[in-house]
Length: 96
Image 1 (cartoon, rainbow, N blue to C red):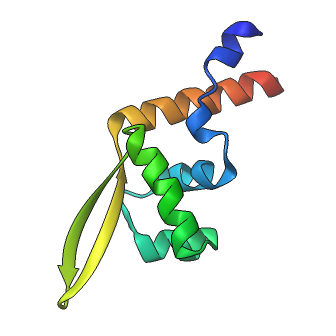
Image 2 (image 1 turned 30 degrees about the horizontal axis):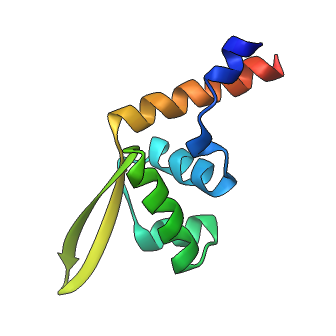
């Protein structure tokens, strides 16, 4: 049991961060507004959780312009994907 618990990542304990990573795992990238709409969050709430995932180096962002309007897209890093898969596997083992 201790081995399983050590694989749980505190970065994904919050359901919002779990949702962000889940969305980024099945999409190559998502822009801020798409994530906000998908998860039903406010700008500030989403921004703070994205900042936390960026700090852990699980998510990166790129800024671009679409028709002269700024657009920020988010991408799960390789280390973020690996950590997330490990976290989900640990949860599955706990439930088994």
